Amino acid sequence: MGVTIKKIAEDLNLAVSTVSKALRDSHEISADTKARVFEYATKINYSPNPYASSLKGRRSRNIAVVVPEVSDSFFSEAINGIEEVAQREGYHVMIYLTHEDGKQEQAIVNDLGNGRVDGILISVAAGATDHDHFDDVKLPLVFFDRVREDIPSTRIVTNDYESGYNAVKHLISRGCRRIAFLSAFGGLNIIRYRREGYLQALKDHGIDVKNCPIVSCTNNESENLRILTQVLDHTERPDSIIGSVEKVTMQAYVACHELNLSIPVDIKVVGFSHLQIASLLNPSLTTITQPAYEMGRAAATALFKTLSKKKLDVVNEQIEIPSVLIERASTR
Image (cartoon, rainbow, N blue to C red; front, top):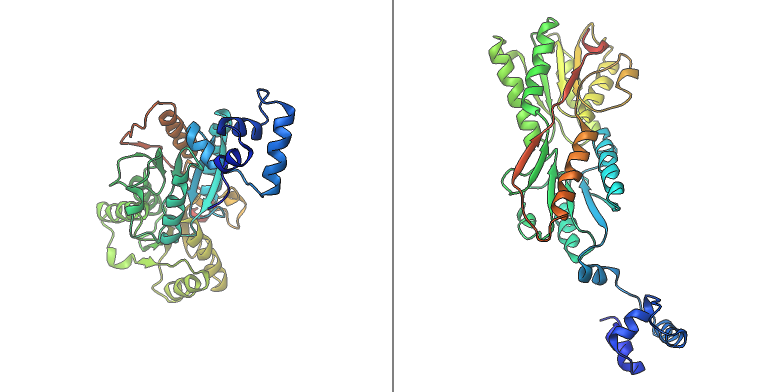
């Protein structure tokens, strides 16, 4: 166990409150006493625990944002929205990455209960199969984008089912009849809703689902390129693709390039993406653009609303902010 303020107080024959105030350079303590305390603390290599003091005051002025990655444009933009609200509230944002690892997510969430932060904003990892670690969280907790619907909390989502439906509807209006759905992280609610919207739209428009493959992609880029090349490299290939996440949509572009398939002549592409350079791709990408910034702001606003209360009051609600289909050259 490390040296404590109580130990310093005993060794110097001072009150614990005196030592605490001296270490905080309080004006209530004389210069001689401060010097005595600082000199002894240095001698015994005393290191204060900033989290212990924050627990006592119940405010660290930090919030945690736990996300799978920051390379995805959605999460980087959502963090910008979170930052805006946090700065206005006088809080710091601490970013934690799970890298889609459920065990890493569990370790992070468990560690955040030590007073390091006052609240948590989280988008769950695709690899998380056990979610018991959320049961013992004693901090305000808000989910955004990838949420846990079985845990009482505030959840910030977008209209994934309707967006999947609209993507199919758009491609049908462009003459497509063999529409492939590139699925990734299939266990996530957002992917399931997008897939369900896709299937319902095919049914409602009389499209034969046998000609519309659901392609299961992985988190490995080279493996996905192999899978996509196999799907696209034959005469009965799909005439269009819906990428359920940004990463697989970009890999579809690469696969088409390697197979000398012209977008949108040979195949049309729609992707769920918040990629700012979507309009600069060749050809520019038609996107289901998620309101990432707005979702980040809404999540942070909900968290600070809870933090403003004297006691933890879990609000079980779901706030939906619609996505928008932006047509560009990849489907024209």
